[in-house]
Structure formats: structure tokens, C-alpha cells
Image 1 (spheres, rainbow, N blue to C red):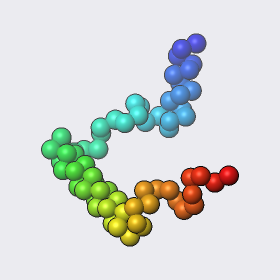
Image 2 (cartoon, rainbow, N blue to C red):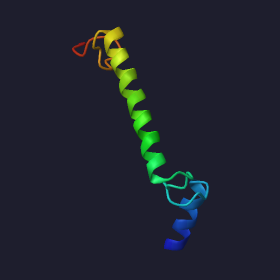
Image 3 (cartoon, rainbow, N blue to C red):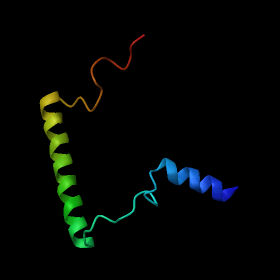
Image 4 (cartoon, one colour):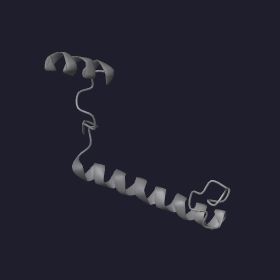
Amino acid sequence: MREKDRERAQSRTGGKGKAGSKDDGLTPEQRRERDAKALQEKTAKKAAQAVAGGNNSGNAGGSKNKK
């Protein structure tokens, strides 16, 4: 029974093995640099949105206290 469940799960994920596998061909140092750059871009984008949006912080318009 467990084997059948594993086969079904693998077919659902496209047979790519474990999710989040680190088979991207990068060394740990390259991965660290890539992640750091992505994080910097993300924080810069959030900061720009906070300045442009007046610190809306993802409220997506409207009031929280609608009745």
C-alpha cells in the first residue's frame, strides 16, 4: 500500500524526486551569493513600495474596519 502511495505521489510531482532538491549545479558559495542578491532586491523593492505607497504594508486598499 505504501509503495502505491509513493508511486502516486511521485507521478503527481512529475517524478522529480524530493521537493526542494539542491540540484541546481551551483556550489554552496554561488548559491549564497545568488540568495543574498535576491534578498537585497526583495528588500529594495519593499522599501520602494513603502515610500511610494505611504507605508501601506500590503493592505491592498480599503480599511480593515469595514462593517
